[in-house]
Amino acid sequence: MVRLAEHRIVLDAPASEVYRHLTTVDGLLQWMAIEAIAEPVPGGRLQWTHENGAMMVGRFLELDPPRRVVIAYGWRGDLMGVPPESTTVEIDLDEQDGRTTLSLVHRSIPPDAVDDHRRGWEFFLRRLRESLAAAA
Image (cartoon, rainbow, N blue to C red; front, side, top):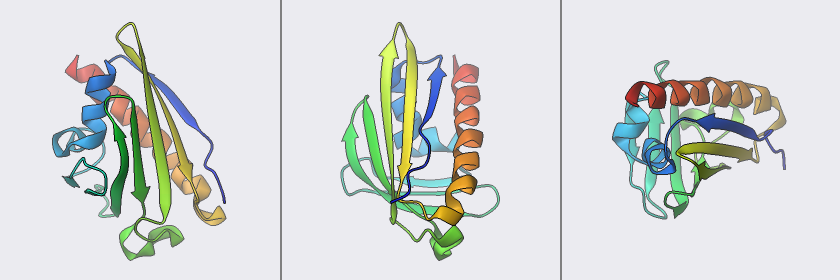
């Protein structure tokens, strides 16, 4: 199993608002996607399409509002050798004084796709920070 290096980012928003950005269509459209489907219940569908047309196809595996989100994650068309729901993304949120530390670990990525996913998460987590700052 390959583990993507853990990403950690501090966001100027309460955990409940970060959680909403991770689990709702409206939230995902603000930082991640141009189209999205989100059914935030265990086993519920999660899908988003990036501006470049790449479509993530997954499912919510675990939800503990507003502290934790775990999803099965992959790409339509097995993009980068990562078929739908073939990897796992774990996101933990820890709020202190109205600021939230988001920790993300993406597991089971094929070795050839690790760098692309690492760069992708860095890019989109910056967009999440910007989206939350603009909403404050």
